[in-house]
Amino acid sequence: MKERFNAWLKTRSGQWCRAAGIRALKTILCAAIGLIPAGATISGVDFRLIIGMALCAGVASIVTSLAGLPEINDKSMPLWKAALIRCAKTFGQVAAPLIPASVVISAVDWKTILSTAALACLSSVLLSMMTGLPEVDGETTEDGAGE
Image 1 (tube, rainbow, N blue to C red):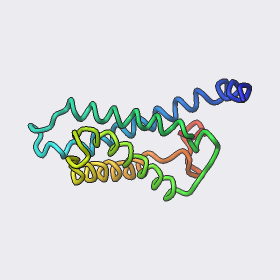
Image 2 (cartoon, rainbow, N blue to C red; image 1 turned 90 degrees about the vertical axis):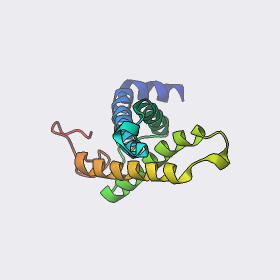
Image 3 (cartoon, rainbow, N blue to C red; image 1 turned 135 degrees about the vertical axis):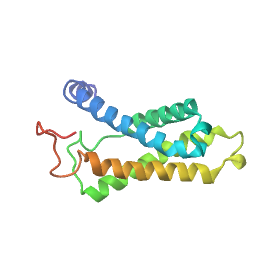
Image 4 (cartoon, helix red, strand yellow; image 1 turned 180 degrees about the horizontal axis):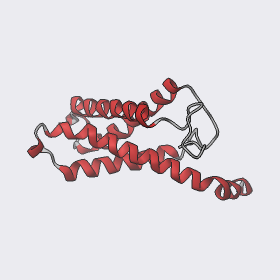
């Protein structure tokens, strides 16, 4: 087991860090987009809160990436499936940090949390369509390697 881990570190750790970092940055962006409407007006937006919650979503993305990244494990899938998985992960990564903001579970503003996470999920799908997904067959960057 130790030998396999060391071999992975030598060959895949850089790829994993790059892929997990890109995913985390995309999650942070989608979370921020989802959180901005919660302020109702631009003067009512608490940017410190948005940045803090978006960074929490980014940390959740890194933790989720520890379970595995399909582009690192050489797994490919259809575009619709990859986008759906990213959407579901983004939804959870954005919703999870918002729940502890309430003192008790009965005080959780579920409508705001679900709408914020849904907007982040939609942002994730749109971002995936614009930038592409490295785990989708046939999608490569200019140098021939997946994103």
